[in-house]
Length: 441
Image (cartoon, rainbow, N blue to C red; front, side, top):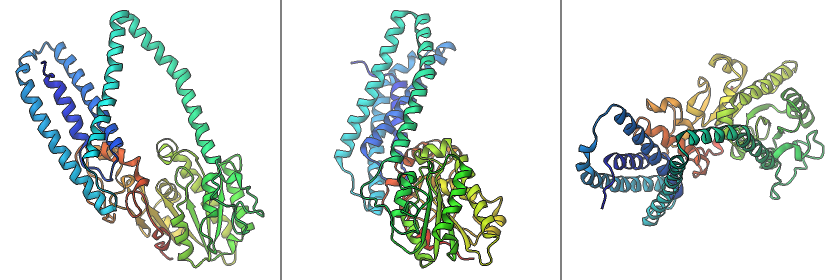
């Protein structure tokens, strides 16, 4: 029997150990298998590059062969210990968050899934090497170049177009459980200047939610052709619905997908006893993480344009409404960008509330900031690669993992994908206190 080489064993072991390091949120076996497979493949790629460098330097590695068997044994022991530790950590998180515990079936699913993914990639890589040997290095490189060019010219644009079409389709999809409002104080009602379809899926959910006494205005991404016309439409809709006649007006900056948390909206209505108007302006229909990575400026530009227009409108009123700003996630970043600094934020608003701000990058003086310690959105930042996150002001809601350079960045990035799947009060899920905790003037 040929034992695996020392480098291969080390690469697989390091990948598995890094993937089993403690994370912020409970994770499914499938998600854990994907993460483990990815890190194992990256580690093996690093091992392969190291071997190439050692050969170029003419460093002899054959003497390491005698360590193959001991290395395999030590790695196996470390992996089993890491699995036990990971299981204990997962169950700690699940107990606190009220999620069912994991058992042996979890690890069976994880192991099989990991082997299938890594095996499929290894088979593909072997196929490429076989093709390179049969065709010769020059032809293989030429083939890869042609494939790369074709991918850039045809595949990538096709994927981008498909994704944009998918986002638009999701935004246009009607949920039969969401009923068109009849109150003239809601956008999308028969009296509204904004049609029910033009609100988009997230806008329809927002205006149809909680039948409180407050005004709810929402301008969808396709309600008007550009930002300026959408802002003008928002002002007209506030006037038509009686929004400017309310004592309090809250600019609610949506997340990257256009979503405004219904819990927050209900809390705001409760906070002001119905004497409030909420206004939201959609700037993207893509998933929030896509907008966060590639369209952050749209959130900032739309928030600034809307708030400035409202500010100018109420400046001419003899008894203007009090202005507030609320934003969750990317909406918090967009809302905070309205103001040049903390002093401007305090001067131009009655109060602001930020929920789950990414890496805490918001103006904090005078603001109420809600941030769960288990929220990966609050943790994630490129600086997480080399230093622990700044968790000042977060509210402890679950056990906190030890920061590990590089590894914590990867673990947190993976947790971002399931941040909204956490139970209420954990991860990126916040409750009605998003509204009831808005500070007063």
